[in-house]
Amino acid sequence: MTDFKKIEEEALLEVLHAAESYEKAALYNTEKVMQAFRKHMVSDFYLKPTTGYAYSDVGREKLDEIYADIFKTEAALVRSQ
Image (tube, rainbow, N blue to C red):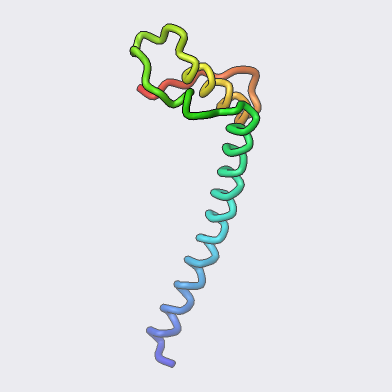
């Protein structure tokens, strides 16, 4: 085996190890978000556009509740601007 091939294999193993840890974190966080969506019974109703004036914006209120649940806080204020 050439030195280059050995270095290449070692580098690929390092990348694989790092990728596995990111994959675990991504799966864990995705599950947290999905649980919050189920808990707050999110449906397509909350994803529809509004007038933009924030009057009775149930989707925005639901998003605040979900963020508060995911980050384990009393309340949250989330705006996409």
